[in-house]
Image (cartoon, rainbow, N blue to C red):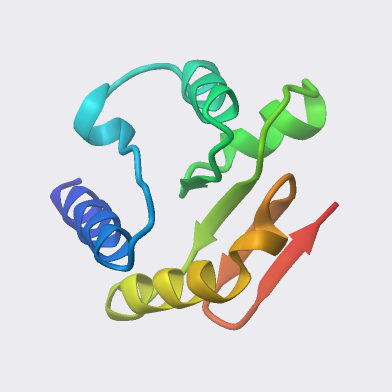
Length: 111
């Protein structure tokens, strides 16, 4: 659990260092329900970065609105931070309003 929080903090820090405006749920409102997280992101026109597959169910099964979700499925902890930051910098505009999955080997963007 600590590793996950450290990685989240480092990703948030790197994105902020690259001039992205970042709202971190784990910093501001830890332990809120996924539906509330999705609503906060939607209300703020924000791309949601997550490792939680439950957001796919909220979007596809329950048809909840969103402004874009990037599901991070990178196994290698050393690659996670640089890969996420690089993909956000390169594909940010393409990720808006899409459900995307980032793995060790590829980025899939779904309409």
